[in-house]
Image (tube, rainbow, N blue to C red; front, side):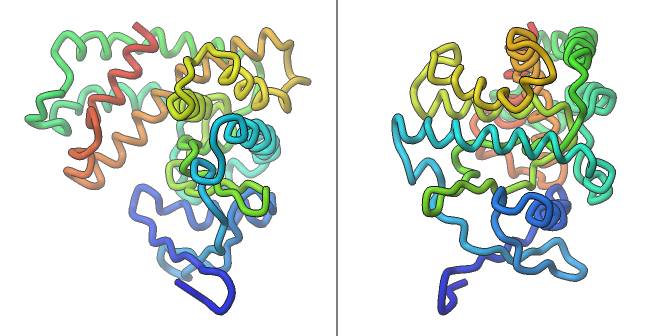
Length: 280
């Protein structure tokens, strides 16, 4: 909506994102400068009015500047995650999905069991061999979550869709928006989307120095919790498990909005295949 100054934006959230307005308002209150300014919340509906945040980072920068901007955003986001642990109960109270270890494993088993009904007659639905392999991943996933928990980093808010379309740049300052897929989980799960999208956008491999530098920038605020090697190993576990978290988000969307994933490359099955690729 245009105004006499900047534009303002109305976001009306559906059932799977109903937590987003109150969550964004909490972040704006507790961590000013990290998210777009929340101007108003609807008193009864999951709607919010937010201020102009700038250009998407993918449109504002390219090449080295794009990577530099990410290296500046990620430590700020990680610092928020550390501080947000004290708000976890309130965040869950908004209806934010719970992707902590126990519900993550249970939710993934449920998603695998119901994939056939959600994929329907799509030609790219998972095969019976893939279904059996996915159904057998429970122990591997539990072991990975236990190894990650051993680091002692608390569960907290996790954006779960932190990519170059969800960061805005204005006058050199970045804000994170679109918290509709956010969940409570082990924080390092956030790296699944961030690193995968950054690698694709810059045409780098995940192991290239430019992408590794983004991971290390994110890990820097956690440097008092473990050695650099331990953090790198935990980050890799988090990145892999993060694909399971994304599957649960796709699962919720597929159930709430029948047919909406039909236009997605790979559909719901595609997210399951990414998990299988990480844990097979």
